[in-house]
Amino acid sequence: MNKGITTKLLQLSSRMEELNCLLSSETITSDLDNYRKLTREHAEISPLVELYHTYQLSENDIQAAQEMGADVGMREFADTEIRSGKEKLAQIELKLQKLLLPKDPNDERNIFLEIRAGTGGDESALFAGDLFRMYARFAERQHWQIEIFSQSLSEAGGYKEIIAKVSGHGAYSKLKFESGGHRVQRVPSTETQGRIHTSACTVAVMPEVDEISDVTLNPAELRIDTYRASGAGGQHINKTDSAVRITHLPTGIVVECQDGRSQHKNKAQAMSVLVARIRNKQMGEQQAKQAATRKLLIGSGDRSERIRTYNFPQGRISDHRINLTLYKMDQIMDGDLDELCSALVSEHQAEQLAAMGRE
Image 1 (cartoon, rainbow, N blue to C red):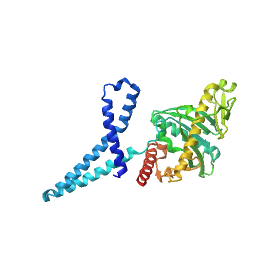
Image 2 (cartoon, rainbow, N blue to C red):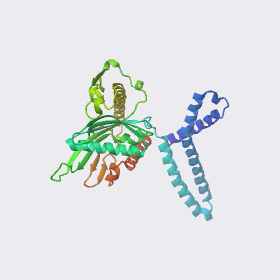
Image 3 (spheres, helix red, strand yellow):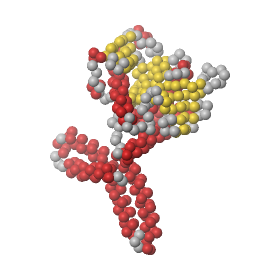
Image 4 (tube, rainbow, N blue to C red):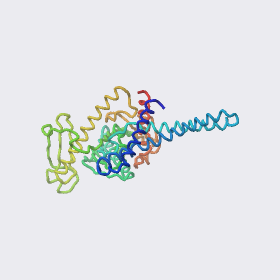
């Protein structure tokens, strides 16, 4: 284990002893805010310190086996113990490194999911509908909630654009690598010659910002327009100017919401999406600076970046960022995304570990 990691673990062990003393103090419960803060910190570092203690015990076991090997009669047994101990040590070290990786502060947040049809006309809109159903089914499997904020339906079916909020524990951590260009290869239902067409959609996954105040918005830089909603929704939604469009003039970001019955609700929803988009833009700029020093294997998440191809004739889904190909089209389109999401997270962790080793 490198010196930097060992130093960090020793510091955490020392801090753990301090926390145990503080939490056992009789006066600690008089300050509930501080008590909650300390118990939260204790819960966060406890798994690391316990695992480090296991690592130290394994080191001691190896040392004892090496001393035992000095006895010719015990050498074979000692060698077996040493090999086993070193394998265990390597596994523990990898777990420790992963636990020490910097945590994404957005991982536990809800998300805004945006899907837009791209090249391919009606077939692209149909594919956008398929993608939304895929994510909706995945959300159901996770027991998350989905609320559609805005949708623009295609005449042939599917969506020209759909924006939804996905609420649930760890939503961003599992879906944050879905941002980018998704390409589909299949024979459209309208194709009479049986030819395979290629279409594309873009997906954006943005963490919800807890407080709008987290992003500074100058009212003078916002243009808010109201208009009559179009499409499905009943008489009320089509007879009142309940739809809202907000334009952030400095960035040119435009958000429209029209699915709610009231102008007030649509404005609140549009504002929350706007804040998320602005924050997402800021995050993208920060990531671009980081990428200037090292290339992230997962990619930038930019919508123009083609990240995945869905080849229906071959039943094949390929993620181009990590060279992963799965032949389980039906299961994935029905929301079974666990294998894809886990592979992307693992690759991201591997890149972080490699970067940690270079520092």
